[in-house]
Image (cartoon, rainbow, N blue to C red):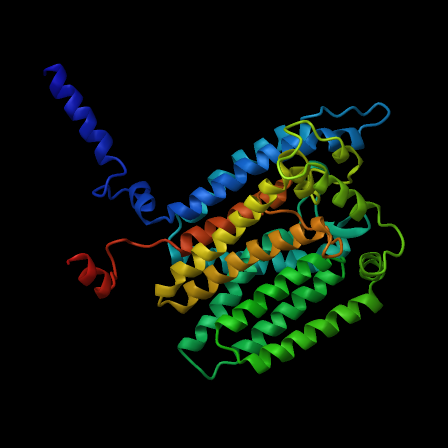
Length: 400
């Protein structure tokens, strides 16, 4: 066989792999996956690694002491390991058939709900809150893993009304959300409670609940915040610090000083100094570190990335006819967006501190794996066969 023939044969193999005629699981996944969403989350992961590298020296200096000396980039290398583990998890979940992804999420929701109920009994206390289960390196936060699975479970219950409109899906999902919220407040974890309740209210709005009923729910939510203020000392302290500047405002003051220290374009990588006075520079307040070293322009770009994910998902859902896929995809997109903007709001000082991480950017092992599972489910539920169920309008316009 001639050299030209060998080159042509090799080229054919490359074209065939992941080509439109490739019917392998990987080939089907490549053409069905939303590559825009995949690109956006890849950018967030890359930004996260850079941000953790920027915040790692400050965190290492803060936690070093005596005989304990932490390398300046220790948290970066750990985060790199977690990202390396999280990416295959995300891709694996995104390759699941939609019915299998739903069943896995329902089983996960049941399992992690049970674990969440046992957190007050067997959990470990960290910074005044009991949210973690495990020992040493193997600790994880059940609520982080429960979030995506619970959202899919709520979406599945809501979708049952399509088959039987007499089913009381709103009271059922409301009761389940209230139970989870109660378990979270026992830890206490006010931030996660807000995320769960916000996603449920968003799904109620999408499912067609009247604005009068939504207003009533909003009133109940306000009463819940008032109750938390009087019943939970941690919530009362943080709300007082935020509204009245009463008590210790060190975290809020340092976050604001760090965020604004870099101006529009930042001090440059490694040039930040304010971050060394900032608690949790690699987790809760990593957005402020980004502001100092990369500028407010970078902060705006990160907020735009999260907004772009939500817009992309909701635009895709305009043509979706399956109620479950609409609720599940919308709920997962809402989860990432709400969590991101809560973290950003805390960093810029328009919300009280809640201990909420910035998705895919803040340092954290169990958080990264849980977020990867959730985004993998989102990619699975937004997968589309580009040649199936084409709109007749698209065909008509394209044929002109």
